[in-house]
Length: 462
Ligand code: DUC
Ligand code: ZN
Ligand code: ZN
Ligand code: ZN
Image (tube, rainbow, N blue to C red):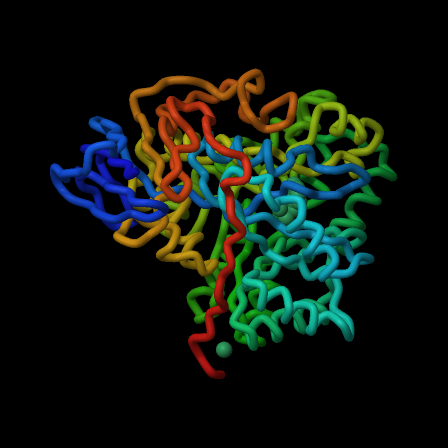
């Protein structure tokens, strides 16, 4: 039985037009005016609403042992939260630590998602160490369809790689046609600054940002781009938060380095003063790179509109108030992370599109189409076209609401965006043709989500 989304305004990265979309099975079968459909077809009236391609969050953490604890979501909670917020594909960071075996870690991460996800998913494979066995393992992981890597230039004791390991990872990635995503902060400088601040008795969450200042991120970004240039690999800077780092990436792009830039939801809307709030209120706003001075926000919105920031992810990483309190005696022990997978689409719509600083096409591009293109999912995902997966978001711009931890689906007792207004919400969401969200509520099936096997991109021979 088919599904007809009738008379909505279809928005892709390049187009806007009113039409009907007919879904047959898992894919988009017809697009046109006043489509005739067989009896028994479910017809949804989308008049006055937008129809967007399913949104893709290119950066989430779900299963994550980190800083002596675990991030709180499971695939069940994270995928329901994602779908409620219009995200139909998750790209999770698969992050075995330096001491662990990469292939074992990969299997473990996959097992956490298997049969548990309500939306589709895939992984960026973290390379936390590079030794004799690594290349063969990574080749196996790429052959399984995971065609993007992740490296951390920070978090020395958990996942961080040395410069030489970064070189080897990028060289292999170039040979395999794999893109490498990178957390760009200088680990040695962060370590030294943390020690210095703690020795001065500066232990509160307000010292988190000064321990990872903008120059530390600029250095990491510059170094990553230098290594990309040297190896010819394709790269992607994750969660870029400030202007000096953006300049480093943009300068590299201009000289031909194949680098793309992601910024994440918190850096568009939250600022440093939130982590300076007293006690646990401050701790709730600790993530890395840290929330910055407010002037960066306007600049990030402008860079997003101009396409200098390519994508918007979340770095979704949920911890509870109790977990945050692990850092009550030292900011270095606060689990880093702010959840946002549920709020990314409606908040970027509200504070970008609705307030006039972001066009609708670019909104779809940054939150769906470009992640799909960069990570080998396009045109199966990331657009509304004949033959594409019927991952569709009917967005009701007339809805008015606000973010609240009381009603959110993420498994935390607080929201970093508490009280933020929402102009509109996804009213209906489909995953490969199946309605998973109706009237803003999850009505779907856990286990509907599939692991997405991707292909490497071998376009050049150098
Ligand atoms: N930053 C966070 O805030 N959390 C997870 C990992 C990261 O890089
Ligand atoms: Zn990171
Ligand atoms: Zn992350
Ligand atoms: Zn090349």
